[in-house]
Length: 311
Image 1 (cartoon, rainbow, N blue to C red):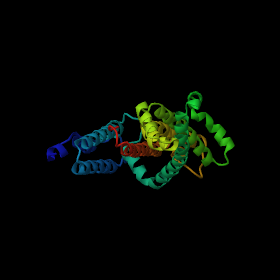
Image 2 (image 1 turned 90 degrees about the horizontal axis):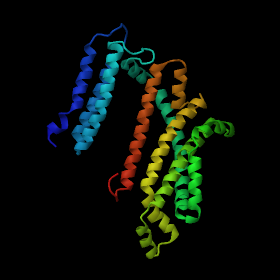
Image 3 (image 1 turned 30 degrees about the horizontal axis):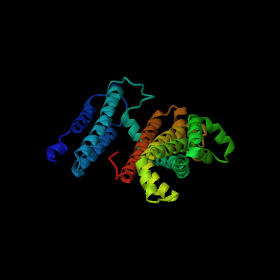
């Protein structure tokens, strides 16, 4: 790629626009911390320049630029209709500079809340993964139980996992155990269903060839059926992970635990006091965390499925 293809791109225009809009007068007097907006914009710009410099693929530069453009446009509109034109409710939608300043001030408790939520997610999700994948392989492989199991899975998975929260709180000895159980339930059924679907959809010719070579049941499950079902397993994992984050936030709000506060409790606690300059950073951090985890799973999926067409 030439230097023009790398560096002459639309996101740089939005970066300059975000800087120039700071020159407009504010509609009302007050400290809106414009330096924090400028600093955030500079960090994004430096990140994009680094990606443009080091990336070997034009698609990577283009996709990163589109994402950063969306972020910069949203911040620009936020600044314009917030502190500059005063068209937003300043209580519910504080100026971005105020939010970014509060984010820096609350970095430590936010990171602690993220870690607690991630730990809960990983415990429940990994437990579901370890149980659901072998169970799905077995139920999908043996015809004698496949039909009955599929009906059971459809029925139970249709029940919203949120209804289990009161029972989990009542039955488990701690709030953390209750939240892990909710994540387990939310993740288990999509992964199980995806695994069974993957087994059923494996090419019969591949299975017949494996049988002709004398492959035993265990080797068939581990070396033929499991790789063939992986695309569907990952679909179930992505679905289960998305539901898990929704349920985790709800569980942390309902099962309020100030001794073990995750992001859900963090958001719920400050929203009760209408402290939205702290609620918004937590929501942003939650969104970034989910995107990063899904990105990591996507990379693992591409690596494990490198033998087939790109996904």
